[in-house]
Length: 218
Image (cartoon, rainbow, N blue to C red; front, side, top):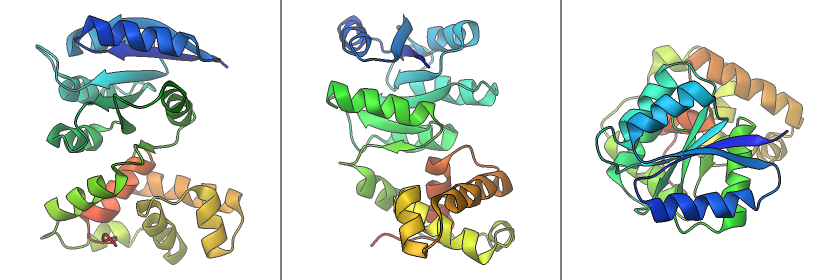
């Protein structure tokens, strides 16, 4: 199945470069490019791309607001935030708004394509080089928070274990090995966790675990 991608960036050189790179990747089609968040929102509503590559700092409606609007619309489109800054404050807010992950603009073409495929199939995506610092920052911002026992009580003991391992960045296969259960069972647990906590994907699940204090860095 071809993955349809929309590129949103205020720099024409970046838009053109990403378009050339992605069109060379099998199974990926660039359907349009937008120069600002308003255009990205409108084109998403019209073209229904599978994935939007969203820059953060754009004139008018920025990538953060555009991401929030796209997610709030209920569209199945998933957003990958592309940023030059690996600890941009806006990245944290974009993830809270429902972005499925983020990558740096210097990500190699092959890794970018694989990231798009990862998000398109419903998984979360965090740039490996900054995942730990990202989660450390979420933990710092939520350092005074107490675990939300009302929300956590909805989870079974096994689901709580799976959520904590998601927060550590483990894949389904790694969680299955850690808990000595089948990978399909892990997928079932993940689906139930997302449904019970009203979360969009694994990225938001990891954020929830750190912000409520269930998971801590280290």
